[in-house]
Length: 310
Image (cartoon, rainbow, N blue to C red; front, side, top):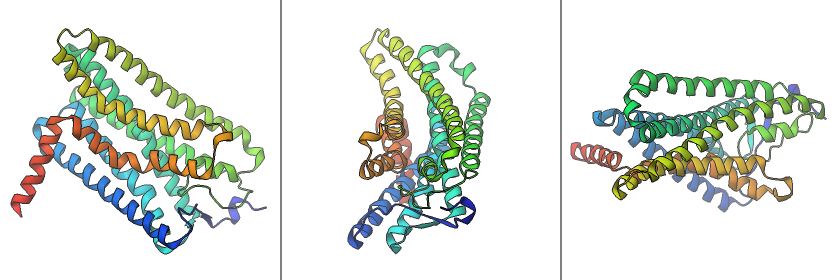
């Protein structure tokens, strides 16, 4: 038996047992990281430099790209380091910091996706009020509220989790410090605090999820009333990237946390964690740029301009 005061480090889950597979995982993570850094960097630069992209939709997309950069830098570098040097350790302070930034980035994405859903709802269902409801000041306030709310959420979760007494060793069943894995190490008499943490999180996430579902029901009803096929196609094309990103994020994270224990396994948990923590930052820029001609053109102009300068 041990408690949290005697734990100086945690042991993360090894991605592979053999040296060859460890190096393969390092190369895969490096490739995903570079793709995420390049894709999100291009979106941030294109939106910042392209004055015609200074609209609410692209402003929130820029915030999402910033969040993706933070997310890929939270979990992947340590996993790459452990794979390259064949180690599993992470310090107690490093684990707490990693959990804080992971929760911060995850909450920020959920809040930003909710705000982006509101942007699509106003654009399609209330287009005459778009300039009033989503002015520059309103957009700045909503983005600031998303980041601030995520910061408070991460601070609350991290402080609560790392104040629990830990009595079941220091080995984690995940390649990064995640809330459920730390809870598995906590003592049994902390169930009330676990329940309170779960209820608060469920209320926040359920509220955002219900709002997204309700908004898309109204959006689809409005789109189906558009008389021209071209108008319906244009409206659907602006919503499709957001809907794909929301579906990927919600389905993988909800299934990972709410799946029954009977179907849980280390390999499944690892695959799901990669899907909702590592893949989205690299995939989001591709999803948004493929369906958005304005963004695609701005990114292309940015890239060709850089090449011409050199």
